[in-house]
Amino acid sequence: MNAARSAWNWQIAVAPLVLACWATTMWAAEDKLVFQGAVEVLPQVQQNQPASLIGTWTVSGRSVIVTANTEIDQDRGPVAVGSCVMVMGTENPDKSVAASEIRTKSSQGGCVSAPPQDEDGVEFRGLIQNSVQQASNTNLTVGGRTVQVSPTTVVLPHGAQLAVGTCIAVQGSLNGDVVAASRIQQLGAGACHAGPGSGDGPRLVGLVETIPNGQLGDWKVAGQTVRVTADTRLETERGAAQVGSCVEVRGQWQAGVILASWLEVEDLSECQKHSPGSFEMTGIVETKPASGNVGDWVISGRTVRAGASTVFDAAAGTLIVGACVEVEGTLQADGVLVATLIKVESQSGMCILKHGVRGGASFSDFAISPGQIVSVFGINIGPATEKPLMVAPNDRVADKLSNTRVLFNGVPSPMLYASQGQINAVVPCGVVPGTDAMVQVESNGAWSNTRSVAVVAAWPAIFTLSNSGKGRGAILNVGDAGARTVNTPSNPIARGGMVEIYATGLGQTTPACVDGAITPQNGPYPTPTAAVTVAIDGENAPVTFVGSAPGFVYGLFQLNAQVPADAATGPNVEIKVKAGTATSPDGVTLAIR
Image 1 (cartoon, rainbow, N blue to C red):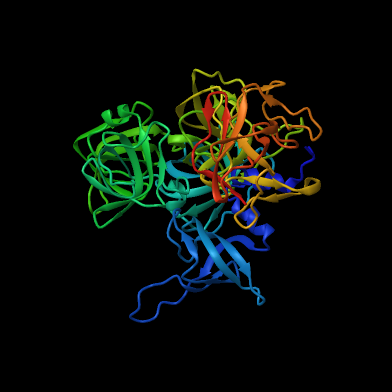
Image 2 (cartoon, rainbow, N blue to C red):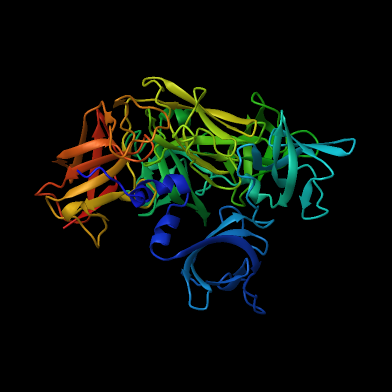
């Protein structure tokens, strides 16, 4: 095996974790364009015609052509003039952009400029929870932090009122426990309550009552019709979905049917905690009743109705504007969630979501292992501006990005990427299999809630090109003279050929794993202590090399394996990696000819 690796291999396998939108790397490789900017002009609405986003936009001075084939992701708020968006597409000869995808970054307030690059700089978003005038300064409570607004603080838009409940972006510096604000920008509310890209609710939790043959079609879950399609992701690590299983369903309501985007089997104890057919969501309190707690709340943009029988759990903090809360209740046809429970997760408004600690390759929340690359999903858990990994002066990946850390049992983890809704990190080597790890985020002096996750010796998973944990693996064909190309249906590997696989979660190594260490290009390459095998089409694929990937942070593993001579051919042949007694999830494939 040729141990020398080029940087693009790292982008193929791990850019999904490090860059949050790993497709940006692929588009760059295909001469496509990605940029972020503020929406200045939207298509004009013709008289007596419904509003449409199809047409020519102006984004930070550039013409952007939007067609019916353009994917528009508005999870972080609706597109409007003043929205901050990321545009992806191809550049036309006239310098306009033919957009293939547009994503809202914030619904109002334009794009927040990047903060100072030194680690003493502070940058975050949050709702104003309290405001106290002190001499010439105003002390705000924002996301659990004290923010001092002085006469020299730049407040945008000029003359904006910094009222309780307003979503703002803060830049400044830490002075003890106080953030001295140099710049504050008022944003739309959606910029503060946005969770991960897939959204966070409401989610149906209940027992499966009926399942159609072949699983695709209409299910009954706790009396609700749930439509499962080929696009629905089924997570069955806790057992097969069957009548009587406890499941969590995420999706969209349509004419009384839940169109499921995600259906995950849960432990039966999860359903026993809830009323039959209850919905739950995690969100930020934006408004609450004028007097007491009974009445209508707005939580992450949704009306939540609390009555005399609603239980209010404030053990983890006070129920105030800006707090992160868990809500359980009944979802009405008009979208109002009638609450049986409103529970504070964190008074600061920084919140790791339920099941928010997931494997970075598979997105499994079942367990983690020492040295595994993971993703932490939450609300307001990191900087508003995305931050990629940084190598510290000791030639190790830093355990802090933009004053944000993830701690496992109090131990900071190497940080690969940090943003408002997602952090990618490497589990510290010292977590102990057979125990539970307590995971918590600290950002600019504020702390999130904690989440508990089981630790096992190994929890392998193969990275995928779609960054979804399913579909084509991040696999290279090894050709003549060591040439490597991406394995795709148009570029399959021959039977008997060699492939290079990228994975994580293979557990402890020899020599022992070191947090944040970069594996030398010329070795030694830490090798898993557990026995590691590869199966292609269910058959053993001889492994000629397995070790920490040369030139990259510990946690990314490279495996070289030979495709069995009698393996099935086709564009989607299943491949699995086994470490010790644990096997990677179903659904990862490679192309074989």
